[in-house]
Amino acid sequence: MPLALQALLPDELARVCNIDVTDARRIVSTVHRTGGLPARSPATIRRAALDAARAAGHVPTIQIETRAASAIDPFVKYAFRLPDGAVIETVRIPLEHPGRFSVCVSSQVGCALACAFCATGRMGLGRNLEAWEIVEQVRRVREELAHDPPTNLAAAGIRPRVHGVLFQGMGEPMANIERVIHAIRVMSEPSALAIDMRNITVCTSGLPTGIRTLLREVPAVRLGVSLGSARPGRRRALMPIEGAHPLEEVLAAAGEHARATGRSPMFAYTLLAGQNDADEDAAALADLCLAFATAHGQRPRLSLIPYNAIADGTTPDPFQPSTRLEAFRAVLLGRGVGTIVRYSGGGDVGAACGQLARPLERGVRGRSSARPSEAPER
Image (cartoon, rainbow, N blue to C red):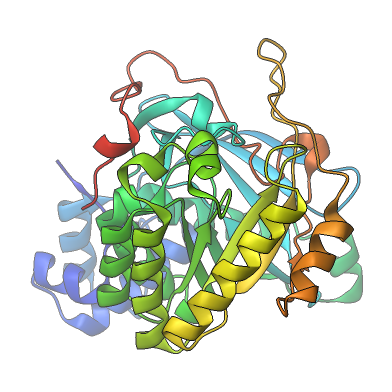
């Protein structure tokens, strides 16, 4: 089976094809700039090297099935169809600096962890994405930015670029950790997508082995942890992974990451009316953050996320947004814990936090009935 060339690093391509690494870098650069191999060898690449690359691999792609631009903010959601017919969703996120964007990528078709406040969790798990399918999400978004930049940027003469990547789309990244790490290495390769690893964040619902693997293999990458609740019983009701990997175990791994890297983890907390937004919930969350800082020497960056509706027309919405955001923040602040409120853009096109979901199609369902304890930690 031919190799997907956009998932190869230059040294890997040089080794596979028995070519000079300089030629390999130029071939990798061409693949990521153009989405393919040239019909004829350019002056900068030896013909024998290009022929060897063409013989060893190909450049598959993912097709844009739909592109939905929000009418209320500059977020854009893409539905990409994969070669086997599965569809994943990806979000282009505008950053504060004009012309800079982050791409929220999917790492799996569906998800096995079944978090109650996440639309993807209703899908079950279809399959893991290959490294090239993860990389290609970013490359396709970058390609569109280059060819069809937002009107306001084009008018101002600003050249847009992908500045960062967020692994918080469909799927649990730590359950596909080997491919996620390889994709990160390709994304950060200067001759490929050239995205600084420090601008890549990998978020998890709570797989400690994956956190430790991330630390060992790509320590420059930022870590995010979804909490759900600081109270174990309530967290288990919202996030079944708590039964297999209690939050205490997850935070111990996150603490190892914080101590080794000197970087604070991001703790994400989705506020749900009547579920995890009471004063006692805020007090428990404050105690958790303070205890983490004491134990590991890094105070986590706490991000509160308003709940985004996930009703799909056939299944009713299980929760309502909290009306206690400011009261909740006041309790936290009173205990010495500051917060930020994450803006979840693109809600009108289903691009906001927790809303990414596509029905699984025949032939790609795979392990859709997997329980959280069965999610692979590779």
